[in-house]
Figure 1: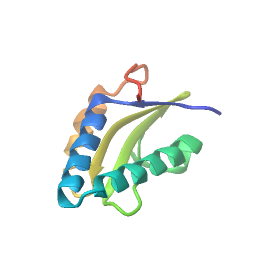
Figure 2: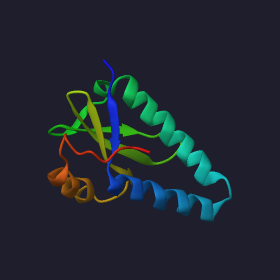
Figure 3: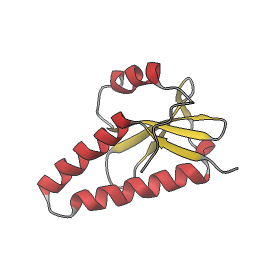
Length: 110
């Protein structure tokens, strides 16, 4: 089954902030972070159901090499990424976003 990947604006902002933080620590580290994110997203697209439920319909995929997780919801043929957060971040962050997550959200990944 082929899935469509939708990245919500909040998740894009999470990625932007993390990228800038890592780039500030060492030039090129932000690019390494994004490559690891792309790898994790690719794995999610291949088999989104391989990751277990974290809360209700919310799933979490851990990112290799960086202490981040991708939080997403699968609805029919759509994968909606609602957050990309540091693993020590307060769980209420993704919890608040779950309330707003809708399967028919048309915010597409560029």
